[in-house]
Length: 355
Image 1 (cartoon, rainbow, N blue to C red):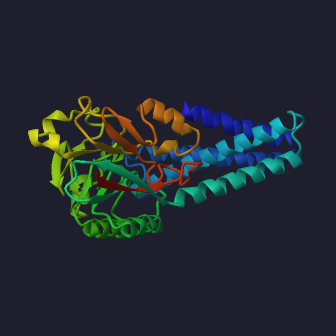
Image 2: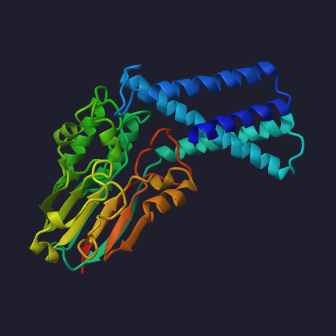
Image 3: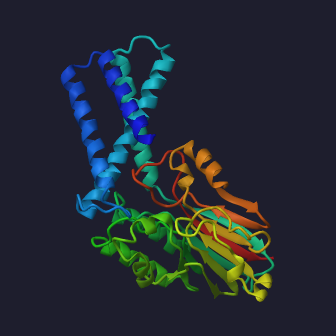
């Protein structure tokens, strides 16, 4: 469906170019350019994740795939710009002047989306509870960084600088951290490791669906553990008097259960669920205090978040469900194109305060 929509959009843009009197030479260049990215994306998609045909080296494949999706998003922005210009002018003949205005809008929208994707900011949340031993516990939650594709070292450096500045007691990774071949990402992995060391009471992680996409190509679990994170795969851990339960991703473990990992004494403790996707474990009602999730990216492009949240039965940000708090993060990175629209990336700084 997405492929047919992309082809349809690019055909409509071609028709608008023709209507505006653009030469056949320029129109043919547009078609060849669009065809190139269609073929590149198709070939690259058969070389990543669990389907492996070795058509392209992994690094080239992930970059080409991300660029192909980026081109599709740019043409989608172009479609809205062309439609908007048509709407404002009463759908009269599409002139070169209107074409220039539409292209300027497309360029402005593209630049904005690129800029927003890299402008990561901290988002602060406070939760009060009577179940805390200390007066205050600071958790920094990081999810959906997607190291791979078009992500850069400098983007991750900016994210990790914000984490360091937040001075977390506990650092939590909510999955979709690794999303590509790691053989040329040594500096990124060093950053992950250095940040884990600074978390005074421990660093914890769960897998997301993208970690499982790459499981055949790289030792995802080994890399995360080597970076100093306690990777919880349907496991529990304890620190600072709170219980942390890591539920594996739906890709392997649809929604999962909570009861097998609880002990009788957990009824008096602050129970935190770390889970990539927002859906609660089936038996979570009344058994947890906070769940941290990501996965949806807030849709990455407005208004897609409304539909993604509907499918995931979630609310972006902080909400209450089944007797506990659920926080769904926009994520810090991007999946595919390095672009976002009115859904800013974040690191989440959660202060748990003793009542």
